[in-house]
Image (tube, rainbow, N blue to C red; front, top):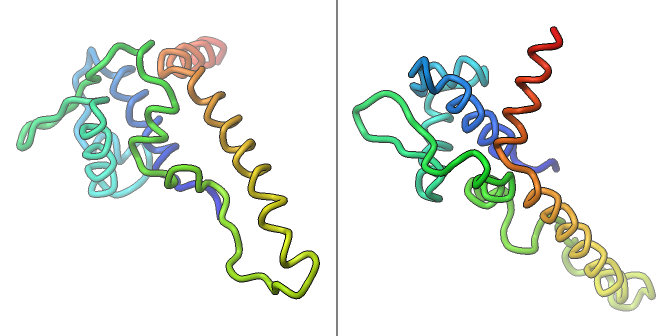
Length: 145
């Protein structure tokens, strides 16, 4: 099962808020149109981003703005904000393998450290990429077209 799409949508929301900042069109309906999803989904994720201190939104007032500078918001911040996975649980272990089987009784202890290392490596990458990097890349790609 892939990581929840809330992560990609969270990145999309923050990037769109920044890139349309001067136009002031960051309502959940506008963002939902860009993401191609329901505004209720956007409001839920925006609530998570607000709770994490990444955006500022005010009930009854359309629009949102970033609560931090672009260079201070990492993809890891978004990953944590939208509850993609529980702490150290990116990879699930199957329950109750057969203890009488040599593989069954040893597989979890063998692969769990590998899973942990893989998750930590991914999280390290996410900590080194900011929304500023994402915005810059999109700007560059738009200039090429």
